[in-house]
Length: 387
Ligand code: NZQ
Ligand code: ZN
Image 1 (tube, rainbow, N blue to C red):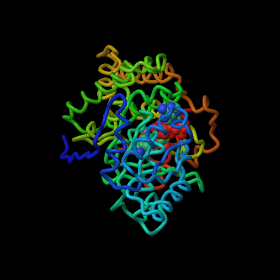
Image 2 (cartoon, rainbow, N blue to C red):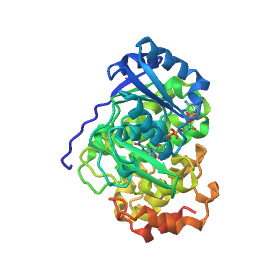
Image 3 (cartoon, rainbow, N blue to C red):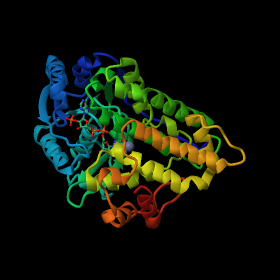
Image 4 (cartoon, rainbow, N blue to C red):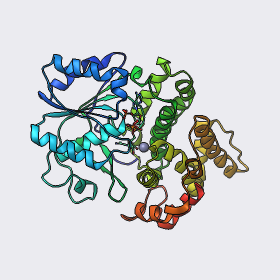
C-alpha cells in the first residue's frame, strides 16, 4: 500500500426532502449567492421553486445563471465569473448534475483570478483560492458533488480538459434520491456507467497489497450492478435509487483509491470523444472502457481474473486464465448493453474520421494512464478496437 493523505471536506446531507435545508446550509457561506443550473429539468420538477423558497427564507440574495449544457462550455463559465465579480458574490449553489457542478467549480476558481479562466485548463496557472460551493444533486453519475475536479469544454477547438484541486470540493452536497426519479432511463444508465468507470479506473492498478480497497471497489461495483436494472425499470424505487446515488458519490470521493494509484486513461480517451462529438460522457465510457480492457488485460492477467471472478462471478479456469479474464470483459460489455448503453463507436455514428486527431490531442501532454502507459499509437489502436 502506498502512503496517502485522504481529505474530503464535503458535508453530505442524504435523504428524502433534505433539499429544503439548502437555505440554512448556504447561509453559512454568505448572503449573496450565484444560483447555477442546467437546461430546465429543475424547473419542470419543481426543485427550482423549492430551492428559491429555502434560500429566500434565509434572506439570501440570489443572482441566477442557468443554461449549463451537458459537456459544459467555457463561454458560460466566463459569464458566471463576470457575474461573481460584478455582484461580489459570496458563494455558488449548483443545482443539477456533473455538468452544472463542474461549471460552478470553474466559476468558483475564475472568480478569484484576474486572467481568463481557461488558463487553469491549459496549465498556465494553478488553483489557489475559490469561492465556496454548495450542491443539490439531481443525477448520480459524475461524482463531482464531492470530487476536487472539474471538466470543461472549450468550444473553440473542441477541447475538453480537466482541472483538479482539493479546494474545489464542495462545502456541502445535498443528495435526495427522490430528485433522481425524473431522470430519463438513458441518463440513468449513463450515470451508472460513469460511476462504475470511476471505480474501474481505480481498480486497475499496479499496486500490490491493496486488499481493502480492492474489496471496497468490488462491493461498490456489485451494489451498482445489483440495482441498475431496478432504477431503469422502476424509476421511483427509493431503495434502489438510494443505493445508486450513494454509490455514485463513494465511487469518486477518493476513498476507493487510498493507498493505490489508479489508471484514468479511459477517461482521457473518452473526453476526446465527448469533446468532439458531444455525446454523453457515460455513453462514451461504455464504448471506450471495454476496448481499453481488451488492449491492456495481458499486462496483469491475474488482476483481470480477480475482477471477472469477484465482480461478475465468472468461475476461474486455472488451465486458461486468459479465458477467464476475457469472460469478465465480455460480462462488462453485456451489462452496459443490457442497460441501454452503446458499446461501439459505430452505434453512436462515429467513424474513423477524427481518430488520429483525437489520439493526438489525448496524448499531447504525454502518455496516458498508469496501469499501462499509452502513447498516441496505443490510443489510436483503442479507438479502432472500439469501432
Ligand atoms: O440540464 P438539465 O435540464 O438539468 O438536464 C440534465 C442534462 O440534460 C439532465 N438531468 C439531470 N438531472 C435530471 C435531469 N433530467 C431529469 N431529471 C433529473 N433529475 O441530465 C442531463 C445530463 O446532465 P449532466 O450534468 O451532463 O450529467 P452528469 O452528471 O453525467 O455530468 C456529466 C459531466 O461531468 C463530467 C463529464 O465529463 C461531463 O461533462 N465529469 C466530471 C467529473 C468530476 N468533476 O469529478 C468526473 C467525471 O468523470 C466526468 O468527467
Ligand atoms: Zn467519469
